[in-house]
Image (tube, rainbow over all chains, first blue to last red; front, side, top):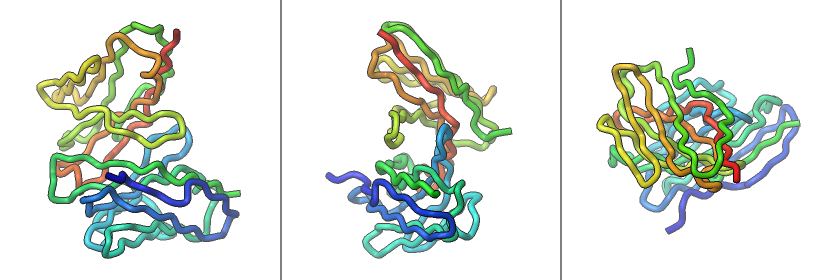
Length: 114
Length: 112
C-alpha cells in the first residue's frame, strides 16, 4: 500500500519565478492538506482540498494556490517566489469521513529560492 | 502568544534515561492532540494520540491536562533511536478534515 508521495524531492528556483509541487494521497484517502515547514519550525498549514475545492485556508497570501484532481491528487502553486518561501513543503492526506484518523505526511519537497 | 508552545531543547540525555516534554496550547476548544516525531530532513510521523485519560505505548506515555491546557510526553529507557524532534500537535473535532496546528518541536539527543 503506497503512502503519500510527493514530487519533486528538491527544487531550486530564483526570486520571482513560479513553482508547482505535486502530491498523491495515500490509497483510500480523499482529502489533501499542504503545509510549509521553515527551518527550525513546525509545519504551518497552507490549505486543504476535498472534492476538488479548497475547504480551509491558513494565513498564506494569494500567491499560494492549489488544485485537486478527480483522482484526489493535488498540486500546490506558488507565484512570484520570495526568498522567504524557501522551506520544506509537506503534503498530508486523510479520509474526510473518518473523524478519528489523523493525517499522514509525504516525504516533502525541499524548495530553495535564490 | 503562539497557539502551541514547546521548549525547543535540545534535551541531551544518556541512554536509559527518562525524559519528559511538555507542551502548552492556547485554544481551549482544541479537541484532539497528538505527538508526532520528525527525524532530521524527514516528514513528521504520528507517534501517538493523546487522550484525556492518558495513554501508554511501550516506553511512551502521553498525558493531557485540559484544565491547565498542556500535554506531556514521557519517554522511559531512552534509546539512541529516540533521537529526533518531537512535535506537539492539536487538531479540531474531525482530525481528517481540520488543519493541524504544530508546535516548533523539542529536539531530543540520546547519547551513548
